[in-house]
Length: 143
Image (cartoon, rainbow, N blue to C red):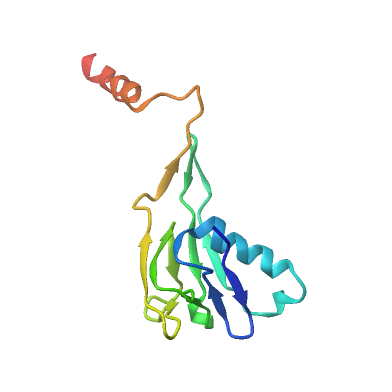
């Protein structure tokens, strides 16, 4: 799937087609690449983020991406009819302002798939499985 495109003069992030998009890989990362090109850094930032911080035991805070709709940025639907799925923790910076904008003459249905987890657990091959950890937790009760 193609990445989102950016129009700094109009503060639009355009999804290139209907289909599924990963908030981090195809929208946020595309913006990071766009901002490095030419003089695009002159425009207000389109995103800010939180997350990724290590909290110990192989756990990190899940990444969250906030579109700066408070600065005027909007995610514009493609010139197509159909369903769009954006997977990942993508939220508007200002929840009272619109984040998405329909393209005139087209009917796109949007579905956001966000994580309900605040912490992402990363386990290496030497870590315990959930079943092993549950068994280990029972040991103090047996003593």
